[in-house]
Image (spheres, helix red, strand yellow):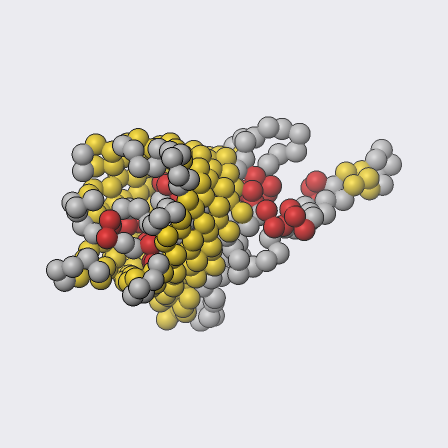
Length: 343
């Protein structure tokens, strides 16, 4: 394989560490965060049943009547010429808004690379990009506060001369108690398989199980979020040898050994949204895992923090979010939502 392709994989898996556990499955771009609201709130949110149809990419059960005739796009200009984003729309089926469908697409373009053979001779440029087209449906369980939803995804990936096609589904459930303004959600994403492989080796898809709860307390203009991510893989914490300390004679003083609580917190993200029903929203989030894995010892880097805002002007909503990784990296995401519906 070409040497420059190894450079691509290094950048690729660095990108995917933001969204999911890397090195365990293919199509890691499926777990990137494409919602400005989610990024600002610290990570993926499975209780986000507002009018932005991009939310249904992460929990199809959040598809609701407020999303009908809404269209949204998001874009991230990431590091090393990498770009990714999403576009989605939601529609009611029939005269009533009881049955809803959702169409979305997410993509990741990793840019152009210079190719070389094993002797160092140039073989020209090559590119790498991945795309997934999603079709979803959601429905309320009659006489209950529960909603069920499912997405069907068709996946296409091209990495230099290698290509692959896959298919997957997302399943979600949402409990919405209107009187308490309480949402509890669970989503199982990326259940599927490769239809064609890159080199004849069948690889797993990046299964993700996320849960969450959110609520607007009575008479308080704030919505709080607690999310649990990567529940399909319990042991997120690991011993980092770079954080071990030694005395002057090279004998170990302290070995990095994450505790049980440390591992639990790496599944948790916290978020708060101020003025959730207003024309202007302010958001703040904290991702414990990102903070723990990307922090620099004895230096304040603010890793794990994220923030964002949105402003609604008639039918248009503009949004922006910012996520801090470490002293050397951060990410900004732009979003636009067009509301042609009744909400």
